[in-house]
Amino acid sequence: MTGATRFMLGLLAALAGAATQAAELQPFVAGSMQQIRSAHADQPFVLALWSITCPHCQEELAQLGKLQQQHPELNVVLVSTDTPDDAEALTAILARHGLARAETWVYADAFVERLRFEIDPRWGGELPRTYFFDRVHAVTARSGALAPAELERWAVTPVAPTATP
Amino acid sequence: MVLMLAAAVLAPASAESEHSGHDTSRDPKSAWEKSLARPALAVGVAADASGRLWRARVETGQVLVSRSDDAGKTFTASVAVNREAERIAADGENRPKLAFGQNGELYVSWTQSLDQPFSGHVRFARSLDNGRSFSAPLTVNDNAEIISHRFDSLLVDGRGRVWLTWLDKRDASAAKQSGQAYTGAALYYAVSDDRGASFAPNRRLAAHSCECCRIALARDTDGVPVAFWRHVFGQNIRDHALARLDDAAALRRVSHEQWSVDACPHHGPALAIGADGVQHLAWFSGAEKQRGLFYAQSRDRGQTFSAPLAFGNPDAQAGHPQVLALGTHVSLVWKEFDGKQTVIRAQQSRDAGLTFANPVTLAASASASDHPLLVSDGKHIYLSWNSVAEGHRLVALPEDSP
Image (cartoon, rainbow over all chains, first blue to last red; front, side, top):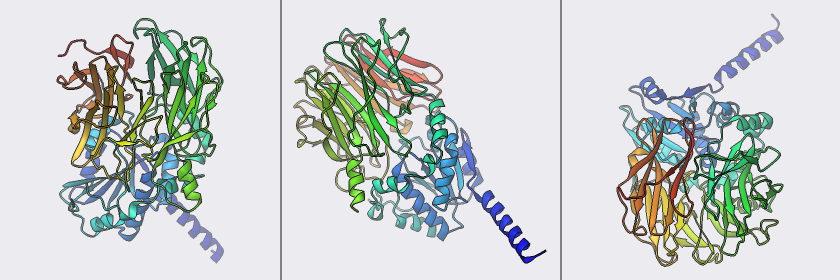
């Protein structure tokens, strides 16, 4: 095998790896929230709700992308409130923010009130919406794009950040 | 509420234009086809001078208008307003609007979605032959950038002039081009004094509105339109403001929940003005300490407001309020989710909003649904509500207090 061929094969393998690393959107339906909680039992994780229709969500995704780069061990679960039809746009945005490897979901049921209820009955639907689950899944909810400092604080000590008045 | 917002003041405008030309626009044809295929849930309903209910819905890129002669039980065959299909925003905070002139004119407005994220044009058409045919649609915003001119509201004033208001990002776009930050969007309007044949140049009512919450419009007893919307106060407090459209300087702050958030609430307010001049206002706040729905009223044309009255169950997603006044009969309706189905709840007042009876459930659906809408034919108040499983329905509100 020539060096050039080896190089090409290596490149192909790398490309294949990159392809499988593209965000795979899972359909978020009734029961998915419980599934996410179970899959992360005894682990802290960040659940971030976002949409392509929400300008402020882009700021939030950018911050989460940086956070995940700095803390690859962090569990970031992203749920888009768009539709599976938007998959192409969603994965492109996630890739641009360095979130291609994050666990990603998209609403796959038009009956969004039920999905929202399973996530948090008190959530009014505003976006972005972020939930910090600590190890025992005590939850802190935040609305709006979060300051890098607050995300960083969570990443360093994954317990619910203390609310300041 | 608690956020440390210091680093999060990035103007949404920059987020928008930063992404222009990417993603959702990469394959506009397929996005367009997909959006046409999606069922549009949002339906507009309005009553004409003789109390007949008219309906506007959106199907495959057209606004379809029909009329009911039996209080909403049946509707005539619909007439397409725009001949050429276009992408029409008709869900959540967006619905097609209907209004009537003083000589039988029928006016229609809607927001056309463009191929860039967050962009749109305000569109308008009229019928001078009782809804049998419509003029070719006009684009009312006179700024042609592919940016946000969306969330239209339509009203005919006491002199028969046609008013359109909407949320506009031209100032944000200009600020961005000169390297400045701009908070939120702006509330713009245009008025027609020739029965909707043309509109005067656009004017700004208020700078720094929230970006994606519908605007409530109502006619004051002297015929002047009054707007009520989610504003951005200071750096980032998304509470509510009221202003008459003849006096841009007199913006009044109505709500003080201090909801400081870099978010898109997608949750606009409601306004009704009774024949007695009492202004009835309802809104949603997500402020951590005052989360939920609120009602207040003004008995001095928006100079002062009553203490906000919380209504609805914040633990059941209470949201998307509507208010309507018919004499001293005031109805509040809103959406809740009871764990299994979405319900439309109502509270009614017989004393012009001083006291309200206990809430009742008007309608329910275990499927996706539109936000509720209230409409009156001058005799009764109706809930207009569309849901996937049940279709569009008009429900007369109970006449007697429960």
